[in-house]
Amino acid sequence: MEPVISVVNLVQHRGKKPVLGGVSFEVAAGERFGVFGAGGAGKTTLLHSVAGIEQIRSGTVIVLGCDVRRSEAFKKDTGLVTEERSLFLDLNAAENLDFFSILKNAPGESAGRLCQRLELGAYLGIRADELDGGVFQRLSLACALLGGPRLLILDDPIRDIDLESRQILINELNRYSSAGGACIWSFSDIGCRRLVDRVGWLANGAMNIYLPDQAIQEWERWRQQVETGGGVGRS
Amino acid sequence: MSLQQMTLLRREVLTIWRDRSLRYILLFGALIAVLLFLAIYSAQVIKAIPTAIVDLDHSNTSLELTSYIRNTENLQVIAYPQSFEDLEDLIRQGGVVTGIVIPENYGRDIALGRQTRLLAIIDGSNMIYATNASSAILTIARTIAAEAGIKTLVGHGVQYSDAQAAYQTIDFQEEPWYNPALNYAYFLVLALALNIWQQCCILSACMTVAGETGRASWLQIRAAGFSRLRLFACKAVVQVVAFVLVALPVYLLAGMVFSIPMRCGFLALLLFTALFAVSLQSVGTLMSSLARNAVDASRFGMIIALPSFVLSGYTWPLEAMPRWLQLLARVFPQTWFFQGLNYLTFKNPGWDFMSRYFLALLAIACVCYSVAAVAISHNSYRVRRAGS
Image 1: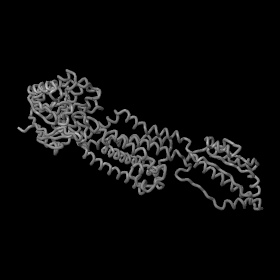
Image 2: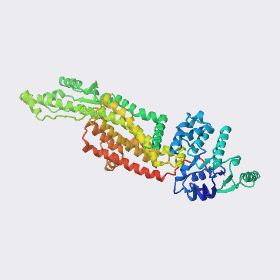
Image 3: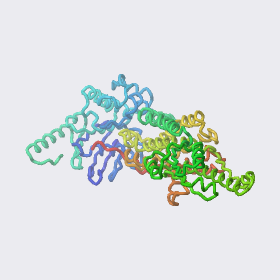
Image 4: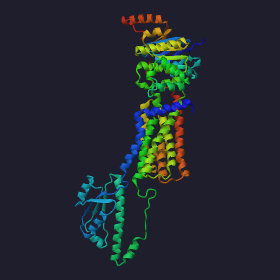
């Protein structure tokens, strides 16, 4: 079966500084692939490259069968939730949902269903810039899910949000995955490893891939190494 | 029009409306400007120019002349200094703008038919006052010179009617056309108000691209694969309509309430303004597409919007500028608009003449939009980076 995402030897720079130095991985349909790393490790750059937002410097990124450098056709089947507030802040929640529905050609009732599941009913008339972090991310996920994407790109979506919103988001993502949707999900809290099937650990421009349990063992090993002054090779 | 385009248009309307400062600037900027300029130029012409007379002669003839000057329309005699030095002090301190010095023996020289010399001093530090004072003094000089000449001829035995006829051989008539009273309000109010309007427009147009790409929501637009050109085209349409709607009350107020001349008619003026709004929007979009961020875009807008009116040749003739500056001025739509505005409002010279102004605005818009489209395509990966 063709992978949903296939990244081969991706190199990205920020200015003159290399951020990704030849990263390769694949994500299968229905899989949740976690991208873990410290701040500045290149998680957002990697996700933006997959989303077709960032220009590819070198390497190949194939998403849903499209080379992102040559085609944007895959974008109609993807949804994006970013770490920063990337909805239309001058629009209220309902207007954001309407706007995304029309631009993604999503049927009207899907917005209603998503609103219900993500418990957004009470916030529809509130401007996006006035929403709390958790509610904002619930709305972001609702917008990303409009149109039934086959791939979700999530950039640390549950960082620093309230527990209730966090659980609502996780429930909805479980539902999405169980329906066969693929997901690439970055996080900087190793605790989130449980929410993904595999963890791609980004450090020094390279990616090592672990199963979640292996990832925590590696984390513990690395942490002890840092605490005993044995080097910071994974920073 | 597709539902998507309607949605983009609606969103742009909401964006403008919900940006409180932009909304107030667009709604009230030009309107307040027209009211302000109408108040400033409400006198319409400069009368009662503060004048001083130094009479060094104190004869009946000099008193007659003083009385004559006092009764003229545009000079208001407010001081009678005793000496030339006193007059100098008065002008230096801004007490008067004009001083007329009547020399000693003025009455005697006139009576003997000798040449005499009056001195008119004008404070040139204020050009508006100086020009008007100069014109008023010239009128007085003509009259008193003629009267003195007639008296001299009569003194030589010529009949009064013959002497008068001799001085009226050449009847030099002045007829200011299109603005007979040389009304400053007619000339300046609408243009100055529209200058404020164009500045507001260009500054908001400069946010077309940079305002969008500088927001985090640009990530969603990029990720969704929307057509950037379609997005910016929709934004441009909304902005142009908003610009014209903002100009509408300015014209209504100026034309209908304050009777500022609009010889070409309201619709022609509105069409010309709409085309100017398109070209302004195109310049703003171009600046915005070349700018690295919204702050840069604003700076570019300021660089164009602020000097463009002076450069347009409205207040100082283009022909009096250096050749290279004339060429540079013609690159800006403001030059074509303000020159065209003057023709349309005062003269209405017809389509054959005005078509070059319409076409120039159209050409500027085409060039700017084309270059902006290339720049937008080239910079389409430009995104705000907040994460890693």
